[in-house]
Amino acid sequence: MNRFSSAISGNAAVIARILANDHVADIVEALNNEPRKLAADLLAQAPFERTVEIFDQPELDDASELISALPRNRAGKLLAAMSADRAADVLRDLDEAARLELLHAMPPALRHSLLSILGYEEGSAGSIMTTEYVSVPPDWTVARTLDYIRQVERTRETVYAIYVVDPDTQHLLRAFGLRKLITSNPQALISTIAADTAPVSVPPLMDVEQVAHLIRKYDLLAVPVVEDDKILGIVTVDDVLDTMIEENTEDAHRFGGMEALDEPYMKMGFFSMIGKRGGWLSALFLSEMLTASVMQHYEVELEKAIVLTLFIPLIMSSGGNSGSQATSLVIRAMALRELSLADWWRVALRELPSGVVLGVMLGLIGMGRIVLWQYLGLYDYGPYWHLIAATVGVALVGIVTFGSLSGSMLPFALKRIGFDPASASAPFVATLVDVTGLAIYFTVAALILSGTIL
Image (tube, rainbow, N blue to C red):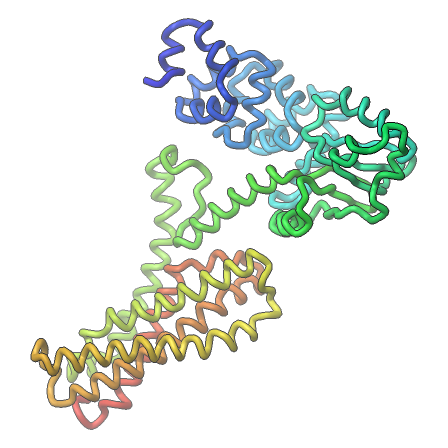
């Protein structure tokens, strides 16, 4: 029993003290470990302002479920008091009836802002922007702007930057940081302290990964979302980080050969987990069955040279490993915007010789192993052991080269047809190379061992 469970069995004063005095991040972590019913009961007893802080944390699990468990009147007030982008996240996960009911109870201006955010596709700049930012006309003084910030600070998610906006057209003119404002002459006009350059901005449909790239490139804490020269909202660095962590988690799941989990691992139901993993695993298993077909095709060769089967695991794993390495490198480079679709041929020209060199390295190791075992008497590969060694060595060169080349090209192919490159999971690449690797191995064996043991 943890502190909240202990408190609930005690009295409301203990609960109030915990919720009032602990850091909000610690409270969220503790609530995430509680059953949802108990967490909802605790939030119902918490002071209103504290509850707003808790729901404003993206790390709070099942926020939509928790807000649904509260009385509609309290839930509506909480959403109205939360930052606009976080309120939109919570509303997005509610069923349509509950969402419309809560939106209908909100003031028209807030309802319009939330609907505009909800209208953008998830993963875009518009879907994670907040409409709570500080904007002022160009004819205000520094002193008047500072007074205005003091008045509205509690209703704004951030005051990292101040945006100069034309009061008639609502066009974004300039942007400058709070530090610049504080250190300027109080009587100076805002238009004179802002840099005479167009502010960095993003369109509402820009992908979050591109937004993150711009924020990193220009060392920003927030970037305005602009359409037709009008500012719609801002995207803050913390919102970008939260979204990128979520997307990277999904990519990691897909790269491991399964559907992305939409709940924490320990809270995922048993059958839900089976559903997430079973589909991909079955698909990969069916793909691996092609290896049986390849081996059946070379059944006669296997009967004549059983010794070749000893090296099948070695051959298959080497090709799969090289392919997975190349895939990982390319996907990461794509994520960091180091590579674009047009760079496929440059990658191919790098991976082809790399594959050959890596294949030669592994081939020499494989041949050395056969020679060493033969001379030490650890295993007798027969009178044509030197040809078997050559078969393994040449096959490894071909398989590792093919694995490196195909593994590096697969993310480009997936992106070209509109799929996420992260879908090029390591198990999928390994399966692809396993099947082709066997064909390469037996083809090389047929060429080198023909007329001897074949």
